[in-house]
Image (cartoon, rainbow, N blue to C red; front, side, top):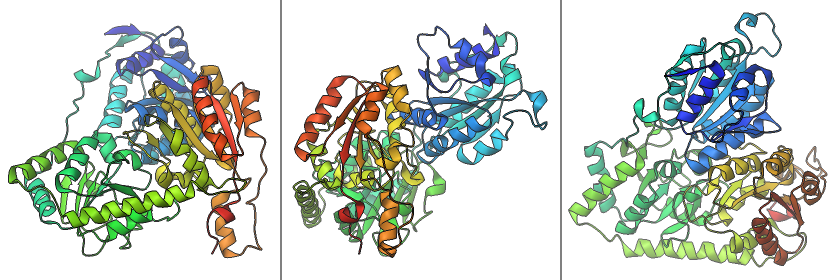
Length: 556
């Protein structure tokens, strides 16, 4: 028990969970909590410039570190601004605690300033949405929120704290450490289903592993690689999940997805020939599979391993479904296969996967030699592959120029790719990078944007400079909304509406904020600029003019 005001009780509840940062914009409705953060050395308030950016920062922190991220906003407009970042966390299964200072309870349903149905707004995009009605409930409701956020398939939880509750006088707050009220253990798979999966894999002639985001969440990369090596099973990753396994591994072919410009067609070709597919921590969603049989053959037998049993068989009929933690289930599958003494796999299938991997490498190497100015985005990625350190975290924005990076960058370590996922929200990558850098300060962090997406949250450059968050942002500028322009060009090149835009010089914009700015037109200069930016210890922006999208990707 500690004697604390309501605001101090919130801070103590966060401290008990090991929270190091609270992202947000100060507001009167949660001022008691802000005041309780004054002078604290272990919890820091990071004041942003827009609530959307603050939510993205909390999400980036959580994705990079695996620990809960925390953001806070005022009732009404603050909450609606926060919502996009919270939705990104929800779709990315990221443990984020979103707080809001609500209006005083006496003003509810009376048209008070900034009154809004914050619970109703947040409930569809969170695992739970809670209102604290009295100060003495703060400790146990915060425990409930963190328990929910970190349990099973992780995700965000919303807590509304009415202003008058936060202004409550001191009370006896029962603050507990996490090990006193929640237990995390790996959910094992059903032994019979594990045995069936092992049998199916050992009998298969053309198995393929699809290693999804659940592999990262579970920390199961080593087990996936062990299974692949044990039976010579080629590995692919779902669209935007490339960091689940080391991309340099001989059995990794590429990322699977419905867009031939953003995913590896070689991975699609391989997957379409598989007789058994083991989907590990993957929902086999639309961006990856198209929900049809273009990559997943009607004749393929599917083993699906998922922590969320509602996802098993949701997109495709399964032969074996295993509800459980990916690492725990794979450890049991490996034990069964080794006990059977069935190892090796079909060398012809392995050779076919090796050939497809080589074909992809040759395609990317050819792109890295593309000439012309402005640069093609594909050539930009060819240069980036040479200089991005293997331990670097890369955040990719939505849009065409960042999107084609999924097939063209390489990831060797878990939790080094942060992507917008099904949400596809522009403005994602830069604030996510700021949160990721605070979550793993020892790792270089690089955000990749198009020109349109970067301006969604470019105001957070001030946050980065003030807080000394040294990330590198690469902005590929073609002065257009590329994805939409390509659609319009394919429909009728003579009827373009709203797709051409103008921009400032992004390197100069960065310098105005006090960051480093670089302007790179020649491919040979890009590597040096990235190295200089990483070494500077300052927030940096590298602008790279690139050619119009109609020249980068085929219109017809």
